[in-house]
Amino acid sequence: MSSASSDRPGPLLCVVGARPNYMKMAPLVRAFAARERLPRVVLVHTGQHYDVDMKQRLFADLSLPAPDIDLEVGPGTHAVQTAEIMRRFEPVIDREHPSCVIVVGDVNSTLACSLVASKKGVSLAHVEAGLRSYDRAMPEEINRVLTDQMADLLYTTERSAAANLAREGIDPGRIAFVGNVMIDSLATHLPHAVTPAETLRRAGVSDAFVSQPEGFAVATLHRPSNVDEHAALAECLAALTTVARRLPLVWPVHPRARSNIERYGLNGIIDSGRILLLPPQGYLEMLGLMQNARLVLTDSGGVQEETTALAVPCLTMRDNTERPITVDQGTNLLVGRDSARIAAAVEDIFATGGKRGRVPELWDGQAAGRIARHLESALVPAGPVIARQEAEA
Ligand code: UD1
Image (cartoon, rainbow, N blue to C red):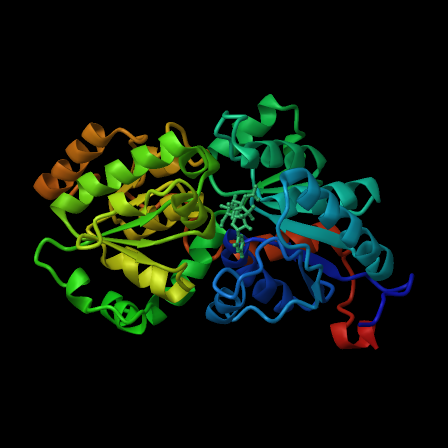
């Protein structure tokens, strides 16, 4: 890896750490590479997620190049993980002298690398800025608020984000409404989605699960508020069981949820005839499952957005969302963990087809290009194009 000398623009250091970061960064890396005036990209993986299922497989699905730098932090408490990422990221900045650090989303890696960049006086861009659940018990909410306070450039996915940022005293001149890079990935990869029947065959399961006349549901759950405590997790499983009585349910289980199901001995209450547990799936498999599902149950932020873009009914097992546009305009409904409420919502989907959403403004598959153009105008002084190869020679 060559380090930047003082008369050359340093690279764009693009940071990923956990699964939802990859779908956001993949279109950005491509859009940055396509703009001659922008410096080259150096992709850094913090190692927050490390399983093959949670990392390599998704990189391949999204055609993300292998990271240039892997910090390999692995698991730990929030404090340990954040501190360890910071400790390992600082020498990367010292060596690379980046023009800008680009972070996405709200995971611990986002906050850790933002803190390092900001304290070292390196320009920081945050993609997916300004989303707020107003629930400080969510670790991601702390990460969002703090990252936005430090960012020099804040790229937002929905207009409500600017109002949230204004409340926190952030200069509107630093904010650009660009749309949703998550939907760029969806638009690129939807034609290559794997059919649900094929996903089940690959998992060694009969495809009968996804070929019933009533259709099938898909579930994803991993929020600490839903899966960390015994009582909350048992409530979630009861709700999934209620849904599964109506239609078969496919559940790719996050490692966090799986280990807690085992820890609390809750395996026995999952009806294996109606609920199919799968390992975490690849991106193309998840797209195929969501696109073809009659309904999706989730507590993931990204899935709320993807189902809105796909016009598939989404029942979010939370009391709040940092993505209100998915409720106001999309197919999303907040249902908490209440089995009766969830059963009523499922009946409504059977009776009426569920909420008819529309695709929000600028969720058009072109967000990464807008960010690349904006970043270029912010970072690169006007003047003749110096070909990147020449600048890097
Ligand atoms: C993290 C993000 C969350 C994001 C989610 C997507 C934070 C605060 N949370 O939560 O916003 O939606 O990723 O998955 O950053 N584990 C594995 N293999 C892995 C990764 C994790 O077994 O590859 C285990 C960990 O050891 C830990 C648990 O899963 O026991 C949770 O992982 P962690 O990275 O702490 O948080 P997530 O729940 O994945």
